[in-house]
Length: 421
Ligand code: EPZ
Image (cartoon, rainbow, N blue to C red; front, side, top):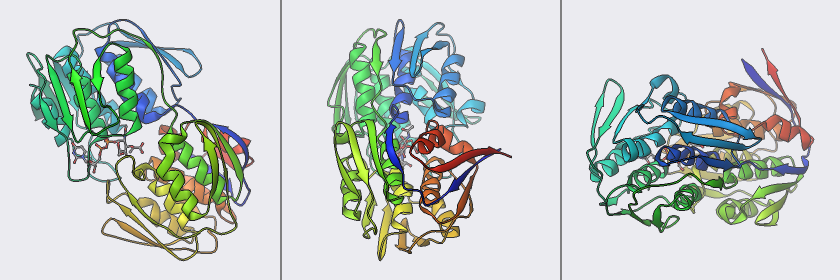
């Protein structure tokens, strides 16, 4: 087992390079199931979620080869496999993104149901609805989603759900539709930059997709897609996390390899809280202030405040003046981190998908347990800003989405160390 030991209170200073986006890399890697020939993907982050997906793709007959740092060659060698096994899928809910490409290209798929998730219900009804509309026959049997089709045909599909659009559901339907016969129109599509990046990759490979990044996506099926070279977009959630780490320590941090335009709502909220941010596409500078102002935050689908930034923002607001509220509309139960933040002295009450935060002067170090990826980031941020030593346990969560986070933070001057025990 490993834990992160953090000596809090050191202002972070210097430059940090942001990785390629995990949540774009995953559907783009999965969409390689659809392609003929080799693709070379750049800006691929070194994360356990990426390794897990590569293992699933290997089982499905794709060869993956790391040629240089952050770059991966990938191509289909054998199309006979259609099973994504439970042993791998259970490690990562995002594995569901192989379902669309498998049914789209191989006309059969057997993908394990991902199972429970600590951030709340992760339904797949919209994925199934979309793929069925394209002509797939889908049943759930012995813990697996089993999909079959003779031929997929374009259709008009509304992917609106009770909590807004679905990111991977949109990717799955789009990936299944690119080789289908005729036109598919996705209404209420997710607009996240990662969906757009997946579409851009597929377009480069020969797909006909219009409207990605907007709520209506039109796809005209083509006969074949070819392997290409493509660079994944920078990770807006890793960028936002480093912004808050810089701010809470009252530091002065420059972020490199970012797309500022994808960070607009996070930046606006942070500025409202009193964080100094100047920047443009490519890089930005973040500097903290003596005290932070309270805020009302509601997570929403893009371009709203991302649910994947909620835990980190909650950590920052726990040391802001006055009362802040954080409403979580995407995953209303995603508040496990608040109980651990409370162990560090935060005053947070949660009810009905909302956290009410009474800001305190400062947090104090404690031993805390990470419950999921963004919760781990939130606890590390809290530890960096706290007085004394914080130990974050169950560290494996952080490696799913943050590449060498302790190395990056150490370079910025943080007192942070990964320890085996
Ligand atoms: C993606 O998950 C991200 N994962 C998540 O990031 C992110 O939190 C989430 O989108 C929301 O932005 C990846 O991209 C790999 P959804 P996804 O389908 O696509 C409901 C992280 O920390 N819903 O957009 O699985 C669902 O229950 C992770 O990096 C249905 O009702 O999320 C939720 O309330 C965690 N039916 C809402 O929609 C469905 O069929 C949004 O979920 C699908 C979803």
